[in-house]
Amino acid sequence: MFFSRYAAWLIFLGAFYGLWALFVFGQNLWGAVTEHWPMALSMAIGSYAAGSTPMGGGTVGFPVLVLLFDMPASLGRDFSFAVQSIGMVSASIFIFCRRQLLAWSMLRGALLGSLLTTPLGILFFAPLVPELWVKLGFAVIWGSFGLLHLYRLNEITGHDHAGDPRCPKDFGVGLVLGAVSGFVAVSVTGVGIDMVVYAALVLLSRVDLKVAIPTSVVIMAFSSVVGVVVKSLSGDWQPGVLGNWLAAAPVVALGAPLGVFVVGLIGRKPTLLVVALLCIVQFVWTCMSERATLGTAGTAVALLSVLVCLGGFEALRSLGLRRERRRKGLAAAAGATFRRGPLASGT
Image 1 (cartoon, helix red, strand yellow):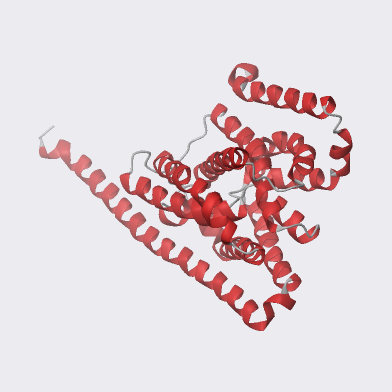
Image 2 (tube, helix red, strand yellow; image 1 turned 180 degrees about the horizontal axis):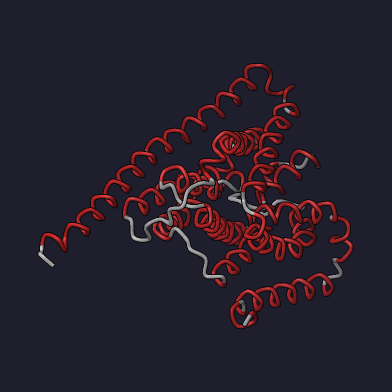
């Protein structure tokens, strides 16, 4: 039963590990793998978060490379693409094999939006963004995301709506958010579209986390593959990506699906709380490490940017509450009509 249900995932794993071993040992690259063992260790945690939360593996990989190892932000972005194209894809296949519910209407829109704009962002927008702005952009996005979950965690984890797979409004929202975040966030940091789509699902559509998080995993996997294709065709990979990827990829191929599985047993609230705290820590860490360059004014702008992001989240929530009241009102009216129907017809 297990093998028949998860056949596609097992085939993916077998193909990946076979090709990885063939490449590593055929090209005598085992030394590069062992040299980058700290990244493999870091991504053991990152891949679990990638599968169990609306945060790609690059959410851990990026700050580890950029903040801990003092590597260029562009390397962190390229590594995010590369490692998520294995870990998040593996988790997505695992999700499909488990037949988990997805918010298909918003997901379809986001997939199309990302496909259209992520390549354009990588080729034309990302090269214009200074390294410092990349670091701050990442820190602000995830710092605000962490703060949101600290004070809205109970509400976010309390939704039970599965979403409407044919809702045209959700498709339009997904299309716009996928296009904007693909061009602005994914192309620059390698992550972000998963968080944006997730935020729209839980704040605007008021969707259950059991639906919202797998949906965010799938859109991040797709965007990462798009990033890998564009980077490979343009030949614009940053030096250092290969060694880190060779060390981390075998870990994330299993770690991300493990996150999908384990979180179903222990619940999402503890994991989300820990990851939210880590997001805030990396924001503070970034501001502290760049304080000489930022100065007081730059730090104030970073803090203001976090508040602006939180304001955007709260605006989505306000719209979502209206939609929820309208949906419940329509459901109540439909139920009342159904109950009156037999009486009105005399049956």
